[in-house]
Image 1 (cartoon, rainbow, N blue to C red):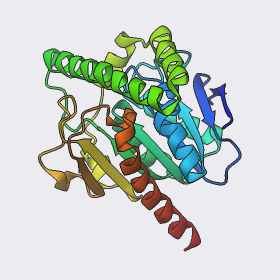
Image 2 (image 1 turned 45 degrees about the horizontal axis):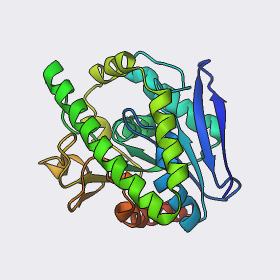
Image 3 (image 1 turned 180 degrees about the vertical axis):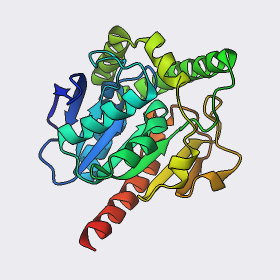
Image 4 (image 1 turned 135 degrees about the vertical axis):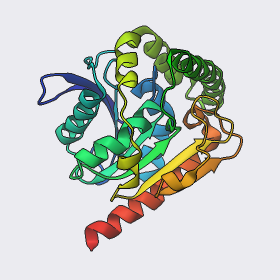
Length: 266
């Protein structure tokens, strides 16, 4: 399968590093990783799986404040950058998947850029506002611990599937490129109350949480989320990295693509 990286230049003058998998397909999907992750790690696992099994082109962004993508200072700038990225790569009422940080910003981007995002799948989305710096430190520690253990599982699965060397290089590149923690904390600290945006969503949205996620646990009140909500049994925060959960995600991707097709034919 063909895969290449290229910088996407935004109208705001900044750049978002982008990974394209399986180019040239009629259906497109955007993929946004979480805090400290990368398009390579997501792309060499879930992204490649979806591209091959669903016959789609996957555009995986390196989120702002990570690696070769430029920095932003506020949540509003973060949303604007990703919306302009959708415009620049040519998304047109397409499906976007976000994990963790990517899921946090997805409803806000979809709200401001409805011509680009026609449906969304939010995985491991934070649902409670930060209560203080100790709460932020606890969540980041939980994310880091889970990411480390889940990446080890994913690497073993990749070795068994014959994709170990590619996934291993992706993990090393993610660690080498790093993220700008200080900038990301400023962005997270300025996150507004997103309940009004989530509650007023006019596009198909699906929300998935891992049953055993301690960093961004499932909400106690699912009525806050008018879209489809799914609690994945036994799953932790970084479940999209594990092969065992790819088909569960793929099933929801199929449903959302069907909803998009019906909307476009109406």
